[in-house]
Image (cartoon, rainbow, N blue to C red; front, top):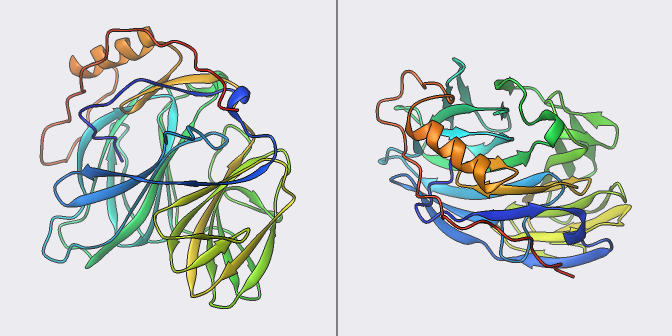
Length: 321
């Protein structure tokens, strides 16, 4: 999925100096962003108060949208570099095409994982004949410097491991949870899991104290460490936790995101992650001139042009706390 914001800005993210080293409860408010003709998303990361959670650097939540008489998701070809995209659905289907020749329909609770590496372009769309409702999340993972120029590739995993307990079913999307490991390729220590909670469930999940964590509420009424988290909002939890209390006041679903704090400072602009203004400018020039990012074949429509890149260079940020 793309960041289609035509007023995109340069952002500096990452660096351990901006990580909260102790347990906290910071509720993040989403920003409403239009994506294509009929999809509106709630953007949780990057957020004014929080840029990253481990290597997770971008989180959109969308739906449930009734698209029975709508085209649904229609995201034309666009570029990525320096990151992985994670497509995660609860309802509906998304057809993925990319410039390395992938063509894959991703369905609910299947992992669509695209590693952009040095350069890739892709499109995402609801199939012409599609389910009535569309609901899910789109997430990006920043690649560390030693891996950010890997060859681009796409992985699809229809079957993922589960961790179960009374009233809880956790699907491990990326990384490892309670001994269960996803087959998805990762390049830094991180975790992504989808938790289905039965109404009335109270449980505690094991966590890694060296990871920082956040919980994205997908549906229902859930309490995370005593804090009510409504669908489409996210609670940042900091580091230093060995377990996480969860309580479901109704049937609910949440996503647990975590990872070792990302040591490097990165530069994000539109759909690219680099390390400098100059690198982003080079990527933009390559996309606008039709070089480096390849061609997405089969999508009915032109690629998305890049927004203008601000001319000024970024300055290092001050510490959050």
